[in-house]
Amino acid sequence: MTAYDAIFWFFSLALLLCGVLVLISPNAVASGLYLVLSFFFLAGLYVLLEAFFLALIQILVYAGAIMVLFLFVIMLLDFRESRHWWRGNLLGWLGAPLAAGTLLTALLPILKRSGALAVAPEQWFEGTLENVMTPVFTRYLLPVEVTALILLAATIGGVVLGRKETKP
Image (cartoon, rainbow, N blue to C red; front, side, top):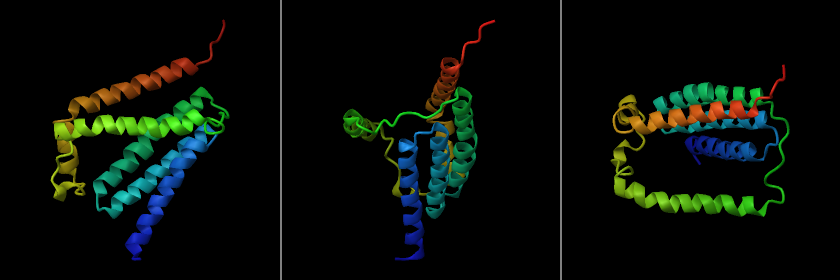
């Protein structure tokens, strides 16, 4: 096993562990922090693949800006301990893989037909600025903007629903 392989396995296993801890942690703030940590491990995998721009964006945008926003909303809504969804919940254990499989089964033919997976093999791991941002600002501009609006609406909805009513 080379040093590259050892580092790859370290980042991969740490990423999986953080993902599991996000799901099973009863504290919402701790789950958010585990998610931040998983973003850093994912950025490490990007560096191993020599996609330095993607690693930088992963840290700046996801681990930085978006997770600060999520943690702010979690703390603003004052979540305390939540019940463990995975204890005694057979529907959760069976439903999650079933839903993921159904989604994959539905999306794979659509992606193959639309040409979204038709990328030249030599460009798969080239994380240069041009390869990443040209499709974002041309072909995928509308989906990116719609995603931003959905995230904004979800954040505002969470704040409105979690707000405590004050009586004058």
